[in-house]
Length: 519
Image (cartoon, rainbow, N blue to C red; front, side, top):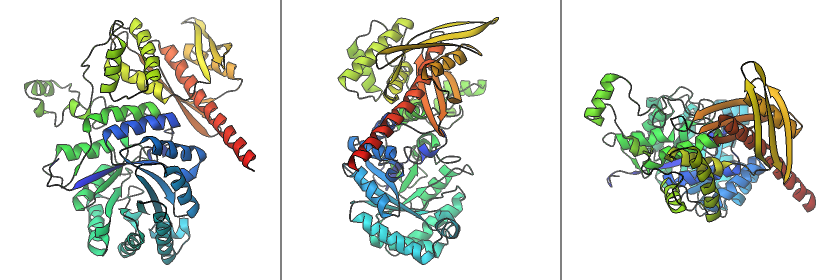
């Protein structure tokens, strides 16, 4: 990074705003996995959740605050003392805690959502920032729906909250309404008309409803914003947020144009993207910029010829610059634990000894099925295993009978606290039969919202990666499974989602028991 350029801070909100995307909820283990990848990416701040919204979110913020050592950890809070208190309790063990307060400032939101006068909004915003600042050393304030706020009122709110102690001011395009030139003008207006603006960093948070989230964010950087709030793979409410990987690589690829630079490790982008895909079960489209499977693919003959002659003819960045693996080491069934552990570390997985041993056993089983085990295989093993909920139900074995002229049937054997349970069922194909057999073991039915199968690598011995989303009690539960046998991968994914449901119910029961004991 050029020392002459001001620093741009990257605030990742994948675990908060990103998780609000329908079907993208994550359990605690999945959030910790993503947080670890974000810290390796060297983002400046991680918004771990909305601590006051639920016991599960509180626990997630608290655990992430405990384990993250380098990045700032933030919790979102409404401008209410109960939210701020919950946020601080969850964050207090963080090395660098930040309370992130928000209150709407647009006429539409103030009248119809808040039902507050502009003067009352200014008073509430300043009072709550003062309250938060007395608890936490760093406070960020967001003017929700800033892009549709009246400029003069926005200037006064920003001035008030800076005077009250906020040191990061976020001016979000909450509904993706802005266009780049207009959004840049809003940032310039705040910098020109707020007397104490030099005491704070101006931040932006753009949604992608018109497909302009990244463009608006970059326009704001050019106008003087020095923090961008974004998510891995661009996940988030409605059409999503500005994609972190696109913002970062635009800055890196066009240093001649952009006036600021971010201090991130771009070679960790691919791993971070994959961790979010595994955790949420939401894949990116093949032509997705930076991390899509076609982002560095060339099929047209003229493109292939040009790239072979000189990569710069059709590639403005290299796959290696974003960390796309190139199988630097080939591992197989004769590889030892040291080589396996070394490769895990190189791929960004820093695990404890017992966990490494468990993965090494899984690796050996896989190596017996495949001639060689690729980086993608190892990553899938490590990510999928690390993200799983507690295995209250574990697959023991299964038996399938299927053909084009006979009904498909499956018997699934699972272990529950040491007890071996089994059930047989028929269905429209072996996977459907397997899922119905699991429901037979459970004794209740679940709604299958989504099921997807993909190949981790190419070749006849490729691992199948299964993703399942189940709906129960108006909530979605995601499961992930991996095997060279796609039926086994599918059963593992279904059981993974069921375990997420059972783990959540067990946690809720523990919370309820503790509350009764306190009462």
